[in-house]
Figure 1: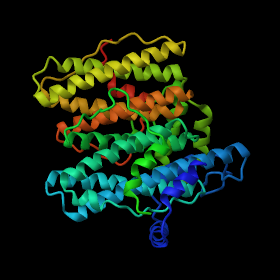
Figure 2: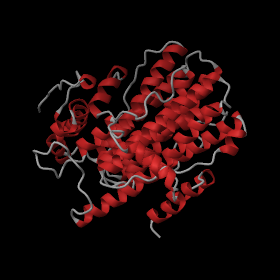
Figure 3: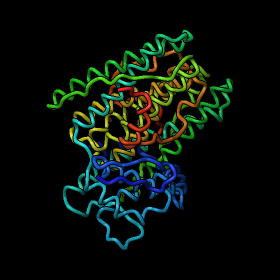
Figure 4: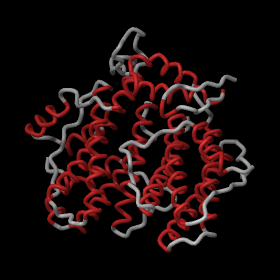
Length: 229
Length: 208
């Protein structure tokens, strides 16, 4: 079983969320600075006159096609996690469960970061010539109705997991540009994790001086309870 | 050796020396891409990538120097009057940085390189406020230094090790920022800084 298959199994989406998703990334939604970053990077194979550089698609050489496919799987995996996080904070804010103004503000800011990650990673998948992973339908009702403590505890869990997930892929990413992009998100997830750990009175570095990575399998299993479809 | 200064706002004034020029060009080109649009800079990216950057030993020694600096900085914190909350963070983070120093020293040796001599540092901190301010700068710079250098690392093992460390630097940065009353994650994407820019930033704290 490949990673793509297992990812897809976990993330099988319903038609309505697919429609929402397509609508969202349709137009110019992908035009972030990040997309430009990747556009600038991914133009090696283009001729000089091309004004719209694109990363070579799997139809290129055999090795690079395989590398692109492997990177696409990783970026789509990251995209799925970012979708989860972004949606979680959105629901948390909408619920009004977090009354503490400072905490609510932090949740909102982190949520904005996650939404930017979603957009950047979607643009990255498109840049690589792939199909972005669909937005999963999430299941955070129980967490949110559990009140602020439960919400913060879960947020910390998810952020620590997210940081570990990026770290787990760092050695697997083939393209240095995508690696650079993933790293720029990885350390932000680490920041989120540390901030939330501080709020719930947990060590900011629970693994000690060296962070522990998590495999794709482990991460997808851990977030499964939060995915409806 | 050529020196040049590029007219890009966020990189203005950064001098580039021969050894890191290729790597710098990549970053500069990316920044230019963000400003002028990607198409215009595509050929330069290819050039920068072809020129490559430093070897793994150079990169690890560079990281080691920054970890030595951070370790010395937190050590300096012990001589200041700090609140118990900040004192606790400083003591914990100082220990983490010292572990990074040990790990990176071992890595350099394993790679057949020679670890740098420990520099003498000086930090213009006198109270909790100035300590936290500089801590934020150093930790944020540390994150950006690793993020900038990591994509150039050739060994997968060294890359993974750098990843386990940069995540801790990111965590430190966030906790210190919270303690200083600042946003723990001010941007959705942490910057990648080129070596020369980082060295220029920390130069005032290196005595010899």
